[in-house]
Image (cartoon, rainbow, N blue to C red; front, side):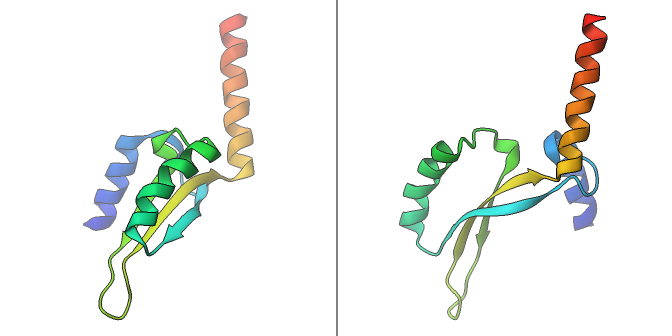
Length: 99
């Protein structure tokens, strides 16, 4: 059931997650300090220009006594062939509108 829910959620969101093998998630920032997390994430998003929420993922890995809670910010990075295919599709759409 969780796999179906994940698939449905990704389809509803749309965006870069469509299509198998479209890209990967790359960790941008990770910390175990909640105060550092709250102060650093807005600054990092601004510095890297990460304004599109559909390309960001926030993970909170809940800890126990042995392992503290970890906070992680990841961004979606499309594979090069996917980015090229999307650019070609966009170019074709522009050509169709102009022609």
